[in-house]
Image 1: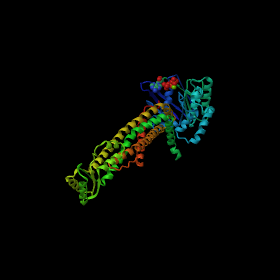
Image 2: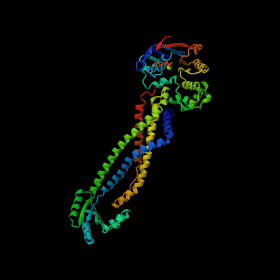
Image 3: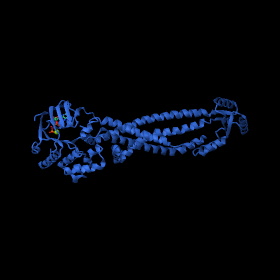
Image 4: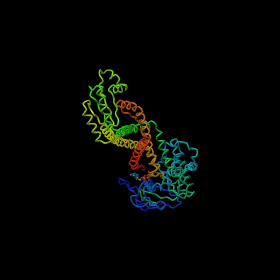
Length: 217
Length: 302
Ligand SMILES: Nc1ncnc2c1ncn2[C@@H]1O[C@H](COP(=O)(O)OP(=O)(O)OP(=O)(O)O)[C@@H](O)[C@H]1O
Ligand SMILES: [Mg+2]
């Protein structure tokens, strides 16, 4: 499903964020990506979503070499992924409903069914009652859940989340973890970047760990 | 079909929403576009009117013969008899100096002047329409008239018609040049408007691209915005041209009548109006397109 082949990423300025990283995530797996701050977790996720290009090596997603995609193919790669970025990036001038609607709007989804899908996604993350609320009035945990609803509204087969439980108190964090577990049980392939090593261990997840850009486990 | 058009409807709706979100800014931008466009548009409409006049007159050229001031009525009558006998002359009209002055006085402002004049400064004149259209015949009549002792001055009207024609042509070219220059300015104005929009919507653009929006999807609302703003400016320009024409046409017609020219000025024809709107919309689209091409490049996605 996702495969890294001796991937190195050097940012302009010379910093090597990833060095010779190889691994594979198979269909239906739940993989937790660990590592200290600055280890390269976000960089790895950006390479999968074609937000950055590898300096060396290859990144494969669903059999496609991401680094060699033409610019007009990139949107279709991103549509096949559910992305929850580290900063949740909700649009502050739109309601929760419109934020979750955005991926459907962007892909030209028939508007009639779109509203139904948005409600299903919001219900799944327990935010059904907040449809018409503006994101800025929500708590950090609630905003995270809206971002997750936005990531799953397109029903992607892969869900990728960068620190979905950061800055949340433990009770909220466990709630979010349980949410990902339920998606995993529904058959979705999941890659989670997190500091919080213990949170997902009860769910039979596989761990890979980065240390200064190198894969150590 | 509705599925294929959906993204366009969406983009159009977004562009309209952005236009109506800031009505004052939208109105002012449209006004800038309109003022810049109305100047050459008005010029072209006037040239078109004058061009029609030149064409209408040149089909029936006339020769004016102005008599010397000291020529008496009997002498004038004798000249008229002689001219009427001339086979080369198809029609003849005598404009006595009193009539010429009365016509002049009939136009508002001139009344005072003519009242103040001790003596009528205008000469008697014959307006002559030659037979046929042979320039050699015109020339022969002209020399014959000039040779008459009673005649002070002969004017071949086709000469001023030609001059008018050339002037109109020159005016038309100047207006087109002006339209080109102001058009370029409008492209720059739109370019900048869209640049600011892209800046303020950077976050939304980034998120949309992250969620799988194509570049076209992101581009489209800006292009429609440019198109609509241009179109709006074109509409206002059209209204301005119609308004100015309604205001000045009667005055110009009066002035022309004082020169014995019957003018019927008209505003832009439907085709010209459509051309104005299309030109304005095209400029807006172009400015937006260039801006989007320039500014959506530099890392809307980080
Ligand atoms: N755009 C960039 N340009 C230059 N250097 C960058 C850029 N993005 C990240 N880096 C550097 O690359 C390294 C890895 O960054 P990355 O964000 O991938 O770490 P991370 O594991 O996600 O850290 P955190 O847990 O704090 O989010 C860091 O040293 C960071 O400073
Ligand atoms: Mg990170």
